[in-house]
Amino acid sequence: MQRNGYKTALIGKWHLWSDPTGFDYWNILPAQGHYYNPPFIKMGKDTAYKGYVTDVITDLSLQWIEQNKDNPFCLMLFHKAPHRNWMPPIHYLDSFQNVQYGLPSNFYDDYEGREALQRQHITVAENLDIRYDSKIPCANCPVTKINDWAPAEFQREIERLTPHEKEVWDKNYYKDSITFSKLKTKDQLVRFQFQRYMEDYLRCVKSVDDNVGRVLDYLKKQKLDSNTIVVYMSDQGFYLGEHGLYDKRFMYEESFRTPMLIRYPSGIQKHSRISAFTLNLDIAPTLLSWASIPIPKDMQGVSMKPLIEKGGDASWRKEIYYHYYELSFGLTKHYGIRTDRYKLIHFYGDIDSWELYDLKKDPHEMHNLYNNAAMTSTVSDLKNRLYKLAAYYKDNTL
Image 1 (cartoon, rainbow, N blue to C red):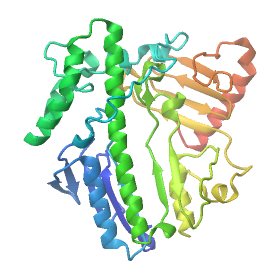
Image 2 (cartoon, rainbow, N blue to C red):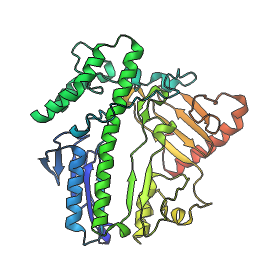
Image 3 (cartoon, rainbow, N blue to C red):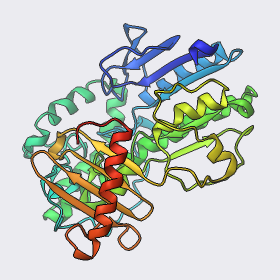
Image 4 (cartoon, rainbow, N blue to C red):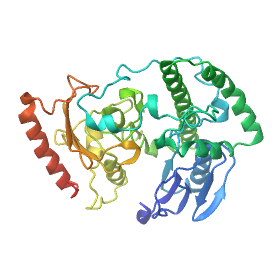
């Protein structure tokens, strides 16, 4: 897009160990970044800003658009929130306190027949840290091995608050500390931490919502909205207690499915919804297609423009490929395929375990059917399709 006359910028979370390329302007958070009074790397130079990170990213983005609105532009606005450890803006610390969040129906999943789930360390009940995640000062609370870094990291985050912000913080979390001190059973502790998790997660999301609104309002006010494509999405889904988990990574539906909305009044009918297998790989080809820029042959995604304009496409992909390569937080490397009805996952490395789910009958993925004799032909078909997809995406690790 830069080579075709667009002004380009990337602002916010980058989380790669290289400098952005292809951008006229970039201003990124180092690593995961910080929630309060965050440092940035602006075009290679360290800088810092006062305020809450979601607001700061939006401020910088709107300033850049204002300076470049008379040109075709492409802006990547990447928020940190709601990444762990879900530290909310100060003015939302008292939000959601009067809402009680019930545990998901499979919160106490026993992981029978699913070896990889038995090995992970991302459960609400066992792996959230009372200080880092629940924001409760507790010098005598045990620290799990997976979170041995968390108490010190939380202290560093708290030190980023100004004296006034720290005063408001302490006042709002004081009552939670009192509640925590009265807990007597493991179940009470688990429910308390789940409630705290949900409150802070949604407080962070509420701030993202506010700031997305600021961008949309600005585009409308400047009469840029009708000819600006806005893609709003997450980098993955997230567990809010399903299977007892927080976090992401696993190929189960809650983290595998990624929310995405596209607004383009000149090219998309309002309130339309398309149920099709789309990927983040498809975004670049789609934007290039709408901008009438040739799509490079080495891009593995497909333009969604025909799919969106038609409301469906019989020739569109019928399955999605997934591969998670890391070992963090007790998770196991795995790859898999998801069709309209089935999901087949292979966990490999330290273990060799397959899982098959019939999503029509078992949408919460509680029953592994891989060793069910009646599913033999289904497994064989899915494996053939899986290996073809891996070859198509040039994944040579299988």
